[in-house]
Length: 544
Image (cartoon, rainbow, N blue to C red; front, side, top):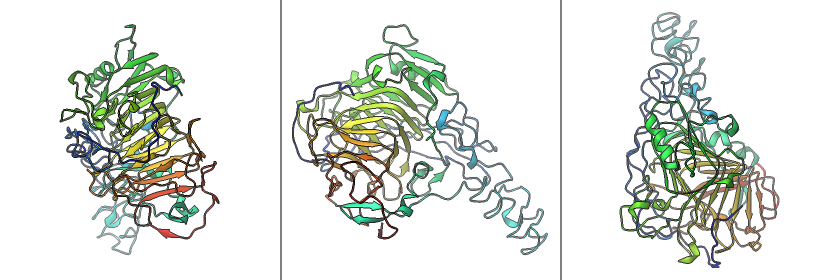
């Protein structure tokens, strides 16, 4: 991968992610998540994911934390999720719960099975209601169609009937949880085979919404986005003026101004675009480069935590409240909208962190909108390269990264969001330090799924010495109500730069080490010089 800047070598130990202003204290505004899937039944108001509001741009810095995941949440989702009809509303898209997903690409698709149809799936006036065929007055509780037969008080598709709570329609299935059983040791816990069967792409991405009332829509984007050659661009970005817009932000603003529910496709011509990008609004957008060489299109900037605010160069999605940028405020690219897709390009923060001190956060991407997809995207930075979050500490938002590359040197994949990294390469760069961490999830305890790294590679660059870096650590986000990072690394190649005996560092701020009731950091059937010795597991051990 081409680095965008030359970083000075500073060999330092693991340090907590410090912060100044902005960022993680005021994590998200009012999220008003609404019924993202309209949980079957009478399919009443799906509500809206509506505007998450503007978060306060951070709170006080935590000891060793980055800052609270602040930023601006902007409009999160469409306003017709659910609706009163079987199709689940007209806007569909990635945020429309239920219904079909017009031009939704791979991130739309099979969400319809949660809307149900009025009647089938427990409709209040459908066949088999309280006085209908087989109801309480026809067949009684044990006759044909009684409470356990076809109809009864549960109607056709009641709690155990066709389309009941686990069938077509109904309540779209109960929320997913997994119990982590492991063998090995607490310094290197390995999931058992039976336990690992639950920690899958599909389960990680199956649900979203408030942590206390997760709504399951079974979103599954793992088939990937179509080839870029199949898209017809609505707008074209070209720095030389040959397109409809000369900046990425201008094209995104135009897309949101167009309104409607149809997906907008924005083609970015080759070149480097030095700008800050804020994506907010209800229009589903796909931003892409035409070439599969993601280095041909680069969006980059160099804000960093502690830099004096320049009003002309501030990300509109993460405007800082103080005189300096914080962690989130340093983001080059910020995604607040739901259903946003990116393909075939590079997003970078090219601040030369070694020019100041060793603990300078400079974020390339912050994503907090639900059902975001990044395919064949390169993320370049050092500390805190990629932040995956949500608009509030009690809201789950999902992101899917496919065949992408993330590089950095400290906590460079972090946040409270739920994210899957499928077929990705996560590269530790050695130009600044060689003994820090790759991932730093701050998953809320009430959220069963944080990060899943699967079928991927965790490697060091050519300058990395053997056995010096950590896979990661939990990060106790100061804005969280009960942060307790969750991650599973499975079926992944791990390089020899990882500490084999104890690859998980103490938590970023609490110094809490792994325990069955503490950190939720596990591995399963990984390979490579840095993988655990022994590999396979048995169905025994402690649970968390």
